[in-house]
Amino acid sequence: MRCLVLILCAACSYSSPTVGPGGDDAPPSPGHDATLPTDTAVPIDADPCGPCEAVGGTCDRGTCEIDVTTTGDVTCPAGMPCVIKCNATGACNGTIDCSAATKCTIDCDASTTCNLAHFNCHGADCTIVCHATNTCNLSTIDVTQSQCDLQCCASNTCSNDVATPQTCSFGNNNCGGG
Image (cartoon, rainbow, N blue to C red; front, side, top):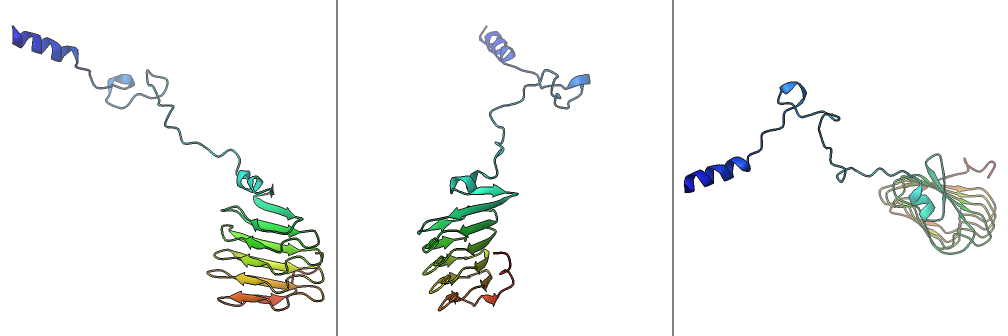
């Protein structure tokens, strides 16, 4: 009697393998008695510009543009090109961190911008364009594992700047229309 109860219990817990449409052993296709898990879906970032907006920038064709009108620090978001526009007198006189960006352009467009700044271009190529007078003076530039291009476009720009561990290229190729 005990053997019969054990056999009946085992038979009640047996489930046959899933058979796909047509009786073969292929897994069932969607729409044929198949249940697809919904809790394992990989989320898709619907807004690739979200990191840019989170730092106060606007996204233009995949590039984060940050308009800076105050002194202090500025940080580019990770994984995208970044343009920092220093548009007000005295702006961008803190740490400008481009290290997480894929590349970075800093436009020092107003008088006395980018003075005493520390440009962190560690790992990201940077172009620093000093358009206005009295800009980009006494600044440091970290170009570890990257390159930089320093464009000095007006009088009294780029005085006593120090780039380490190597120097920046120096010129005025981006000075027009700044």
